[in-house]
Length: 110
View 1 (cartoon, rainbow, N blue to C red):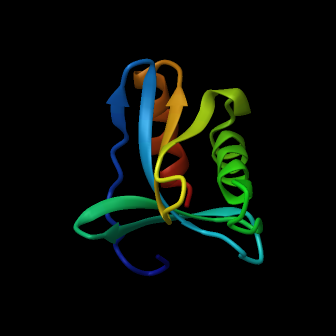
View 2: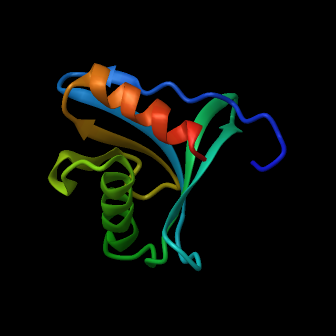
């Protein structure tokens, strides 16, 4: 992601918020949002968490990480699909337009 042109990520709007496609790497050295990459022809957000992928711990860590990254309450972030997969659909509840602007602003800082 450094020194290369990264693909752009457009959050998908849904009832009551947005959905982000996230490629999660558990058992990492740090909890972080790395950027955007192309995965199977789609742009996905790349995230890493320290938690192990057992008993939903990595999903919970991802929800907390996304909430902190966006500055929204943790209760508004949930893994909607892909609970047992590395590729997840993460729903963020709230005003879709405001959340989309927030995501775009955060991505521009990476």
